[in-house]
Image (cartoon, rainbow, N blue to C red; front, side):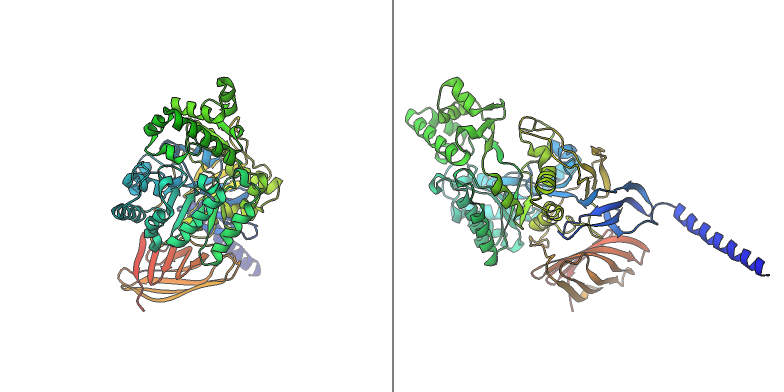
Length: 626
């Protein structure tokens, strides 16, 4: 009998194993699993080894997933698994957004366009058109101050009337209503250059209720002695007085002010101590790209546009003055004519001077009489750049974007791998964790993204996987389109768009629209935070008790939502990161929905007395009543 009993037990065990195998054979649980990778989660906290699973476009699990299966299974041993990089200063072209190979091979998954105050005023239409053509990368847009100013005031140097100010405020708010991720400006570019500081403040303070950002290419003027520091201080002043977060974009200390980065970084810190959070972005090069006239020809000579400028060139007296002032600008900003490289003809400005036997200013004027060429303008010092990159609120952004045409600056192919390879691995100026934070969690918080920029359950599955031993840029000013290496895999909204370093061609990108409930904010990793709410939104019952310790990886607690009318109910127990700001909080996670018994990702926002829940086909939006 004993022997027979053992046989029955063996048969039962075999049957149970067969049942388990049968269940597993029904199909994979997840879409993608990266196994044995090193998680660098975007918070800046220490990296750790784990598996990462993706399902239905979201991060589903992070941990030991040895018993789980996926449709795509990737061994990420010796690789770093990070959130997809977020480029908050993008000059992507519509054609480039359809392909985005130069950005995907850098690990970038999201672009914020309309930088330097540019772009259409119709934000919704702009992004809808981009989506209709297919997106190889996520894209959001700012509302451009320069475009608003040009549409209302025009190209002439004149003062805005009260009616002009009101019209510009309306256009700016309309852009925010239609999903803009902040107000961008390029006060160094005409005609916005002609706007006085007080006029800019009157216009952009219309965005104050939106708790968003003012991201500006600082204005460098002859009146300030061509001081980039004065221009950056103006950016901080505008943001502080207008009630927006000032962001100094592609931050640099130019020309004759080299070596003074600590001074402007100190002003940023002082502004923050007064209660206005301040931020910046920077790229890892000591040269920029722009038009020949933009930063060299004096503002008064560009008043009224190109035709008016050319007419002034034909006046001998005015031409002499323009030539002189153009040389002053080059000397102060770029170290003279030797700092200017002509991208269209691939020649130095000094070569044109030599060929035509003319001084620098005259060479510039002659070139502009023929066309409007682009330039590479050299500036700054390596020591200043490193200090700017190291500042805790500086994001990495490339001042480039998705592009399929010729690129004259290596940043279009090299920015993000250059930071990782050169400034992390080689120079150790940044840690891996902080560099990734500056490419992911920090830029997300700076523009107001809620469900991207971090690796945590419930977050959108934008993922960049790279080899820390090999990641590096190869693009140079001589060969600006040489691809980088080391970015191995990129996932965009849960779909594999870069595999073994090569784009798959999958157009998995989406247009991203901001709402009033997505504030610009500092990262809250270093503080203990909590969210407790109980009550109803209409008839929907809610009970939220979530907390997260300082420097903890995940939140803990529970979120319960129940709709008695439909029977839909879920409880979030697999929580991600609790993000907080003044009277605002957001947390993502995974929940089992009882009406369907399916598991899904949930993004929850509590903004004052407003509750918003996004859980695939279950949405809540309304005022919490006690």
